[in-house]
Image 1 (cartoon, rainbow, N blue to C red):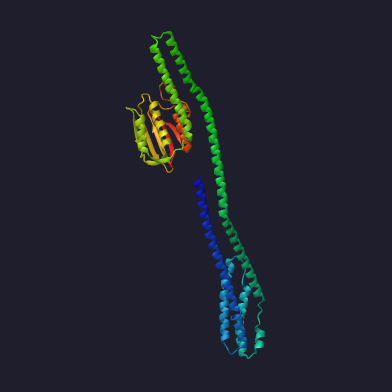
Image 2 (image 1 turned 90 degrees about the vertical axis):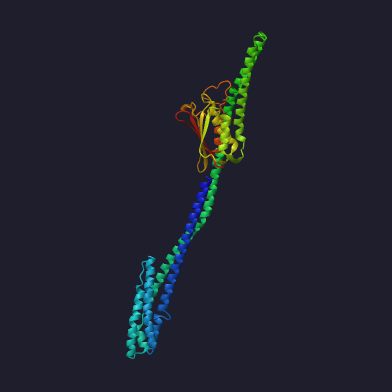
Length: 426
């Protein structure tokens, strides 16, 4: 879950960076378009206004002896036409559906009248007469230019507003991410609390089940001990001489029952205390650990083969040893002649260690696979001196459940069972 939140945060930051760069680029392009438009408008005003076409046109009327103004007016008309072409392209790119016909007609009118002024100068006409003859109205041109300016500025304001809205949304993303992260953490905390509650409920159920089973299984050996003691007393009182062998037999049986009871009580306490036994994480040599357990629990005539690398890993040593010891010792206890051939396998995934313990014993029928990890459950009634309490696999399941990993059982081929469990990488 934590990795998921980190991935979401990284993706969000990446999207934020991409959007921020995109907005900056669009802002830069919009600024360039605004600057280019205003530059063209200024060029248009210079080409037509003071120092431009109209200025030189008027001077040519007043100063017939200075043909410089005629040439300058013609050049200004050509420059004004080129500027209008550029301005018209910008208006078309903005999809404003406007024309510059009034502007072009005005420029063309001034261009045509330059020749008229030249001819009237040759005829000796006065400046007043010439001015009256070539006077041009620029009202339509100014109105057209005003409309274009209003439309272009409105379009640019709309584009700027859209960029501002996107910028606001962009800067809201970190806040939204913080809210989502807080919500996700809240959900995670609630989920963990729910899991803890469910675990506590299961724990209470198991304790109740344990109390019921223990009330029966712990009292049975005690009743047998009491009965055997009574038998011994009766034998001693009725026939003290010949009864000595029988007394010794009863006393031997009492010792066996007491040993059974002691083994069962120890197993029960291991089961109870494992929940609170916080194990320190340390470096564990898997190969050496498994080999030591094999030497202690696999008798002569049996064998154990290791498959895999079995490196040194970080693990909870005591809990791992409990699992391996129970699985290997169970393979010995339940084998017909107590000399099994065991295979211990190890493999590492990205986040877990995977173990398998396979034996060639009688195996576990499918109908019993679900109960094999239950407390005090065994497939058959053990012999009086057998070290079978029905707690070992329950301990294995308890530890694996605490780890939050997996425990499974499957048949071996041609016979036997394979117990598989996984351990987290610490």
